[in-house]
Amino acid sequence: MFSKILIANRGEIALRIIRTCREMGIKTVAVYSEADRHSLHVRFADEAVCIGPPPGKESYLNIPRIISAAHLTNAEAIHPGYGFLAENAEFSDICDASGFTFIGPKPHMIEAMGDKARAKETMKAAGVPVVRGSDGVVKSVDEARQIVESIGVPVIIKAVAGGGGRGMRIVHKIEEVEQQVAMAQAEAAAAFSNGDVYIEKYIEKPRHIEIQVFGDTHGTVVHYNERECSIQRRHQKLVEESPSPVVTEEIRNAMGAAAVKGSASVGYVGAGTIEFLLDKSNNFYFMEMNTRIQVEHPVTEQVIGLDLIRQQIHVAAGGKISKRPRRPEGHAIECRINAEDPEKDFRPSPGMITSFHAPGGYGVRLDSHVYAGYMIPPYYDSLVGKLITFGGDREEAIDRMQSSLDEMIVEGIKTTIPFHRALMRNDRFRNGDFDTHFLETFDWKSPQ
Ligand code: MV4
Image 1 (cartoon, rainbow, N blue to C red):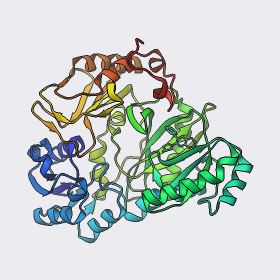
Image 2 (cartoon, rainbow, N blue to C red):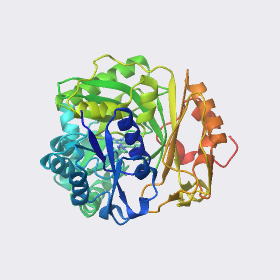
Image 3 (cartoon, helix red, strand yellow):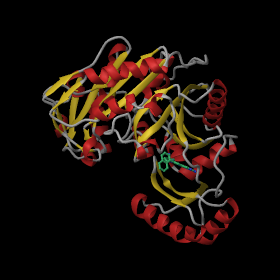
Image 4 (tube, helix red, strand yellow):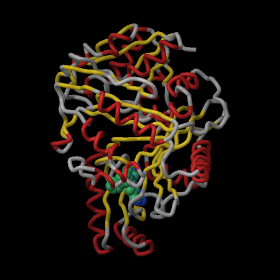
């Protein structure tokens, strides 16, 4: 096992990783930008190295500075968390080449899944259901038109270098296909330095359901059930839960088996997430694979009884994972508390937290790095914390979430707490009757 790990991240996830390292008797190194000097990850790590000015490019995204910090402190492994360099193939490569274990997949795996058209072809070849459409990249607008003539509208044009909702366009009229493809290509070239796009039949009002997978270096790949992530706004998830209110044992087994088959076919090692769309007839289709630990991993942890960060470290050190299937026990739900003003179109609301109270009690978990007197810097994401509640069933978890949200105090900045309080009272949400478009019509200000 490693004796020292450097955490190439900040905020709640840096703290989350430090907590597990301490439990495991592993020393930790924090890296921080000048804006994060007073952050808890700096206080709680055994050592801390300042790696530069506030902007991400000059600190948390600056590979030479992070590698230098690892050399300086004699770290053995580097945990990237999520975001920043977590899915950067070059970083994974440089860590290994510099003698540090990257706690995540090898560069070729990150690259294979980062190209969304290639990832889809790989999964299709492994027998995982995919949405019908172009076979890989569309080479010309003529080819695009032919494909849409055969599959019919609506279709969705996606950038191969996009992902997470970036670089997508929906087309409802066949005569607009050529122009839309040309525009999508130009946009993708500008945004991702790669203009390649592919086409799929557009699935109307799907649910976003993802499967947590895990592989070890001994050839074992397992899944830890689904997370329901349909409550999202502009491709930002706001609420996640496990299990999904609509996933039956039959769907879970089929989706889980497909996710394992797809991951095992590429020899996947570490924590991964296979994202599916579930349509109205309960057909599911592979969308993307994320090769990192995700923000919403705690809901899975709470229902399967396993520390996924511990397991990432264990696997990176060459350890084996148990093949035992883990069925969800009870129900867990997570609300992302962001420093955003839901009254003003969720615009960022950084600044000083003047007063803070963390909810607690039976079945309540708060993963957060903030405290009274903490300054939320404007440079990074706006996550204040993740409030997770769990109970014997979904209703109990939601009731507990409602009372925890009522108890939570964050003053000095605007947060998404009022939005979550309204959502937890909403009948459609309570009945599990929602899809990825739910928030487009949900008015949190009107009485539920
Ligand atoms: C789709 C889709 C419908 N049909 N693909 C969005 C994020 C990325 N991971 C995949 N996404 C989607 N892909 C097909 N073939 C719907 C989404 C989607 C979505 C699209 C428009 C507006 C909001 C959305 C929210 C979640 C998923």
